[in-house]
Length: 286
Ligand code: 3HC
Image (cartoon, rainbow, N blue to C red; front, side, top):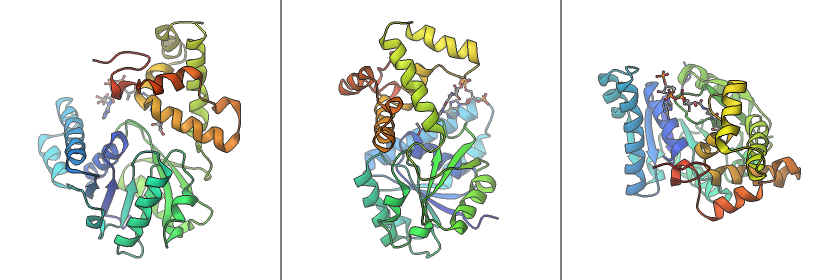
């Protein structure tokens, strides 16, 4: 028993939709909040497609898909999250927007024991906690894309997060969602991105300097090191704008060259080449 049955998810992009899907599939009652009706509808479509894919692969019964969709509601008002026991924020990596959401959640969520969590990959949890009157119940819960597939969550307590909050979320991740957690300090990049992003940047620098083609760099790591996908394909999947934002945040924190976004990545983002989601990155997607 995790004591958490009513979950709110703020944002239904790649990560928010995945978090909402996994929560509803785990039997939890989920409300997803979005900025407007179009974004909410896009989130619903994203989750429905993912569930349909699981049905077509024989991993989910049709009745279970319908039951999962029945446990999901969408809203355009954060006030509708009032009765939630846990809210996970998964909006864009923008500190001002995120602190605004946390301040508003703090006002509307009525349960004094409710936990307010963020899926941020780079913004200090302490800053989000500072926007609320319940900093001991604010924590980072960082999922990995694709959320339904990857088992890990990083738990990131700030200096003022209570141990009770960390333990409640750890139990929730394991028993509620079937995820395995690791703990990291409230430092930009936590564990995984601090290791992954310099590797992805090295691959981009290698490509930029003409040492090998994109395909050969990717094949090198897939066939030579048994990675599930190569670094340039993975960069496209993460989103080149997101990758640059995470690198910028780590560079700002550590001032170390290995976190500095390569010029090619900067230019691709300037050009609107965000990877798979925009149709063009290191590869083209129709
Ligand atoms: N949603 C749900 N399930 C999915 C999925 C999705 N988006 N994509 C793939 N799957 C499932 C498939 O249904 C399939 O399940 P099955 O084997 O039980 O039928 C399984 O995953 C394998 O899928 P495919 O056969 O279609 O494709 P692949 O074998 O090529 O796997 C992949 C695709 C799971 C994406 C795999 O390539 C992978 O794990 N890549 C690495 C991803 C990674 O490193 N993610 C971390 C990014 S960093 C991050 O998220 C942090 C952030 O802060 C940047």
